[in-house]
Amino acid sequence: RNRWQRLLKGQQKQKVKTEQNVVKDAENIIQRFNIIWKEWLVDPAEQFYYIWLQVMILPIVYNSVIIILRTCFTTIALSYLPVWLTLDYLSDLMYIFDMIITVHTGKQKQGILVKDLNQLKKRYLHSKDFLRDLASLLPTDLLYFVFGFQTPLVRINRLLRMPRLNEALDRMETRTSYPNTFRISKLMIYIFVLIHWNGCLYFALSSYIGFGSDRWVYPNITDPAFASLRRQYIYCFWFSAQIFTTVGDTPLPKREDEYLFMIADLLIAVLVFASIVGNVGNVITNLRDRDNVFFPNHELVKAYLSSHHISKELRQRIDNWYQHLHINKKIIRENEILQELPLHLRTEIAVSVHLSTLSKVTIFHNCDRSLLEELVLKLTPQVFSPGEYVCKKGDVGHEMYIIKEGKLAVVADDGVTEFAVLSDGNFFGEISIINIKGNKSGNRRTANIRSIGHSDLFSLSKEDLTDVLSEFPAAKRHLKEKGRQILTKMGMLEYNGEVGEGEAATVETKINNLQSNLESLHTKLARLMVELESSNVKMQARVEQLELEVAAIKTEEDNSSGSKDPEFPEQKQENDGKSIRMEGNERPGKGDGADIEPAEQSRDEESEIK
Image (cartoon, rainbow, N blue to C red):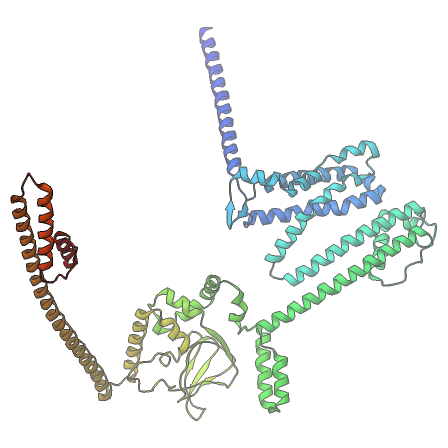
């Protein structure tokens, strides 16, 4: 028995420990969840926010389509009531989740994303968006107990979330690769919803007037042909679309209610037609503008050619060139297309597209990446037709070429003999854009290059390279050295006497200038030394004179103090004053009537010397 009791107690203790561990684990999980929940933040630029906006399209579209359908077609509302209630409260649940995500969504303030959850909550709770979202979730479903389940119009406040739908569609339009197609699709969806609402209202008005009471309203539902729910909805949708598109003959209204409904529909139809025409016109204009930006304007060129009576053969070659651009989507106006972007974004795009092509050029090997990034912005795409010469022998080279696609032949002067064929990744003309002394070709083309088929090339002008290299002097020296090495291997670099004499003359001129400058500096230095010595002599003589005067003044003061009579102090002081004034007048350099004391004069002279 004791054994069994001990075993039972041990099992009970283990159960208690297990339960305690489970409770602790649950508490830890709850604490972690609370921490994560408090720190959770949604960046509106991230993918999660974009996906959530797309998810929110479903409940908003559901409410905007189904509420009016169930309100006007009561048979549909009551036949599938469990389904509608389930979807209703699922959409409400998604609305609640949307409010939570909106609270945790960061906002931009002075270009910085605000991540403080307390500030985000305060901002959202004091905004109009919160009032609208709250109004869209008011429990108006309680009115079912008053009006019955056949009146889902009590949920009309759910349509207050339509701005969220507009935000989602705007985000999708900015991200899609086919914005014009998306705009047309969005317009058609809006028109579909409008026709749907109008058809539902037409059925409700027919029910109010009486089915089959005249030719304008919906036919009598007791007729088996018009009794099914599918037929009812499709007929009403067709009737509404017929009114909005003004296509076909609609029955004439008979009652005042019918006339008012038709007047409202015709006015809406005018607006719908205007919106369709305007949007389609904008799409066509955007497509035309895009073509004009991507490709040169062919119509203007053709008008110019016809007005100047250009030969038929040349016009055919130009037409073929344009046709090649359009068929193969060759874009030769990249700089104009990307001009609206910031410089750093244009640089990143150009680096991702053209850097690999530019790095294949021999003279640019081992160059700084910053230099290559500056050069890729200067690359200009060009397209050459079959048989067209890229350059001819003897022409002055103003740019170099890099072959992106196609084949080019190095031909003789007769235009028949081919020495070599250049293909993708090859380049030529790189030496002509660098001024290298001793180049035998004198920056002129040394071969004839002709396009075999349609060839896509990149050109880099001499001016653009010079502008870039002015900011990279080390790279400039490096490129010139590489160019000299290439010319030396080709035997195109000469070291003649003229170049040496010119360089020697330049060095000699510099030496002469330095010598003349040095002599002028010596002369100035000697003049300054003489002036310094003379000023020192004058200063020393002045100081000695001042010392003598100060000593004489001290001696006179001592004598006058020793000869004073104590019985007649006033008379003695007058005599002393007279003698002092007499002596002051007799000193050299002082005029009559001078009233400046000698001690004060000596101090002034000492300060002047200093």
